[in-house]
Image (tube, rainbow, N blue to C red; front, side):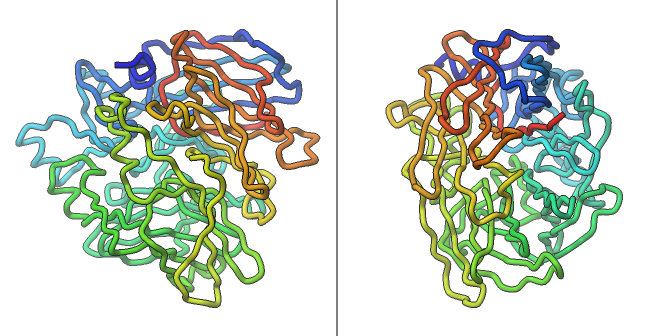
Amino acid sequence: MRKVFQLGFGTTKNEINLNNIPVQGKLPSWLQGSLIRNGPGTFYVGDQRYNHWFDGLAMLHLFTFSRGKVSYMNKYLRCKAYDEAMSSGKISYSEFATDPCYSIFERAKNVFSPKLTDSAKVNIAKIGEKFLALGETPMQIEFDPETLDSVGVFNYDNRVSQHITTVHPQYDPQENRTYQITTRFGRISRYRILDVQTHRSPRLIASQPVKEPAYMHSFGMSPNYFILTEFPFVVYPLKILLSGRPFIENFKWKPENGTPFHVFERATGKRIHSFEAEPFFSFHHVNAFEDKGNLFIDLVAYPDTDIIQSFYLKRITEASIPLPGGEFRRYRIDLKSKAPLSYETFSKANLELPRFDTEGYQMQKDYQYVYGVSIHHQHPFSFYNQLVKLDLKKNQSKIWYQSQCFPGEPVFIGSPEKKQEDQGIILSIVLDENKGNSFLLVLDAFSFEEVARAEIPHPVLFGYHGEFFKE
């Protein structure tokens, strides 16, 4: 197995706390705050290995910036899945694509009381005053942003064992409110749009019945609408309980369903219409905005769900099949028409883990730049190995690439003196295959050239999402 896969899909043995880690170059003096990144801390428990990139036990990584210096801390997310794995020496909770090796008795018991993971490893968000590690299963884990200690459980839905959720809640800074979509399973399943600013009394905004719920990782929000994109990757709810298979393996690709875009009024929760599009799949909505009676939805699209299959570790570590590339699409909905949807694409550069200047341009029609991880055209038989900056107005892109380096999600932080959209920096945690460790990369967002890097002594496993919190 290639070294980068041993590092990126291996295990992090140590939890460390380092002050003033070495910096090459110069950090901006205005950079004050913390980058918290989430993702797997290990793909092994004892002699067992998880099956998929979306499995594993969660680990938080904290980079804190002050006066041109940076410190680093990492810690496993303490939760039931972690505690039981450590005490038993084996995988004990069902993950995205991995189930424990149950006995016949345990499997029968699991039908009535499923042990879905609480290892919330996918994203980071601040809801109200709570810092949360987010996962797709019911329980989100609250943590202390200074010590990374787990401090409690946060639930979107009072029927904890009967729902799943997206991992990309939408925040409206004008309202100071956070919104989320959960899928509640039952005899009649329902998509539920919630105001989750407080976990004590989430407010139901809209509910839509569904026979076979779709897998949804994110959703869209514009100034006046919620957009629920129902990809034709669906499940019969009872099958999850009875099949004995890992969660995602119960879903089926049904392209004959097409892809409905369900549009709900934010003010009333009323569904105004479901607009039909061709079958496709996506993890990530990027942005949504309105202009002249049209609703525009930007997302990263794939023709089918082969991307999920590509993330099984047996397949990805073979490095003989290139990862499918995500295509940046902009769908246009004429709110006065019920015609099938059309879309346009931007740039030939593939894209994933998309980010943009959400502080300045969320739900705004004039945003121009999207940042993401990508795959270098000369090195396709690998993992995400370059960063890309996509210019939506000029329909062109810039890249950052360094041989044997594998960057993670690029997070944009705007300069306090920002006069243009890309005046700021990009932060990305990069795995260095040659050195066997990771470093925090700092790029100038305008030129997309390196400004600084801060090296840490161990590798950060391939992860997903994080967030920067200003001081």
